[in-house]
Amino acid sequence: MLSGLPQTADLYRLAMAGESHAGRVKQSVFKRLVSSSQGAERWVDVSLQFGKEQGVHYLRGSLAGEFVVVCQRCMEPMRLFVDARLSFGFVRNKEEESRLPEQFEPLWVEETETDLLAVIEDELLLAMPMVALHPPAECPVRIESTVVNDEQAESDRATPFSVLAALTRDKH
Image (cartoon, rainbow, N blue to C red):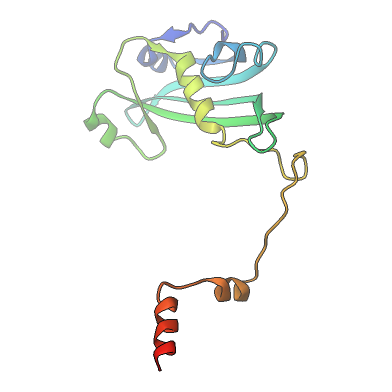
């Protein structure tokens, strides 16, 4: 995995030791993120720094990689570059979470050993767009613009009482 870092680790021990790890992880290990065929030859660059400051055990780092995803407009493969920054403070209960300084997101550490690959995969999933789309100029599917000016939109907009107004005009 990463220069001597196991898949699971005691995060508090790593933070107390002030360890840093950097390297590349094959995308195919992230089963929720990519199929093994998509990520077979692709990598994610990972940099992790563990430490303790302001009484908080933390994990900071960065994740970067280029993924192949399906454009939801044209349904063709596209490249998507993901660059995520991490800043986690470890917490075990709500009290610790409420005292966590603003610069940290809470990372609940309920077990002695934490699956670091799952943490990395979660952050990559969060960094990806909900709907992947080619930039409009690069997408094979062309969508015609239906721009309507404000005056036209206002005149076309029917109100619920316009029918009543028409009825009262007919009676007089």
